[in-house]
Amino acid sequence: MIIELFPSTLFLVKVKNHERIKKTCLDYVIPDYEKNPSTFVDAWDADVWTTFDQENNFDWKTVVPLYIDELRNFSMQMGIAGNPMVREAWLNAYKTNQHQEIHEHLPGHFSCIHYVSYDKEEHSPTIFINPFRQVALSNSPDFIGGIDETPGTWVGQSFVKAEEGDLLIFPSFLEHKVPRQKSDKLRVTLSFNLNFVN
Image (cartoon, rainbow, N blue to C red):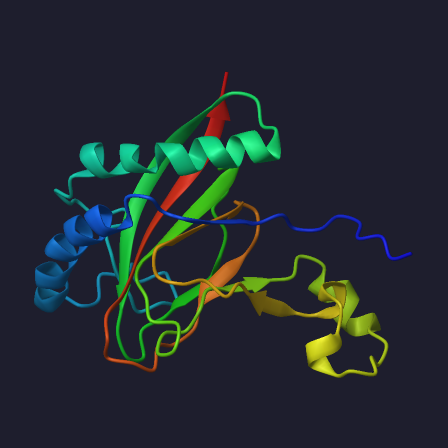
């Protein structure tokens, strides 16, 4: 019997209001991106258009509540007490060679990525970093099936096969990054941090 101990629990769901959110996001992102395609902070090792920590007039009060069904479904399935509260939200956009460095979203309980405009054939996925990698990789046995058959404990990083319209929810402590994009087709995500309050 194989027992998985201390797994990272992620939640993937289709966004019911995806088309409405996508239109609102793209109407805002596309013209703003064309004006200034790189708004990253100098201290970051990143090249990305983002509203994170930037003054913006995006209609957050209309868009954020459109996720309530997915967030309630998540909290019910996970057995989480309290109501979901979005702490902050932002948009990210990438084209060829743009990327985001390894980072986490503490002190949130959970973080969310809505793949607003995302072509799984052309866009690079969000890569998650194994929190046990420093000890696991230095002490990894050889597995018969190679990297494709290696249990997650001994893999340094991995990704979820998300599609456009998916909302991916993960623990805020889980480090992740966005690799350099290889397509000039705009990759747009809406991200937010989530806490549960009684």
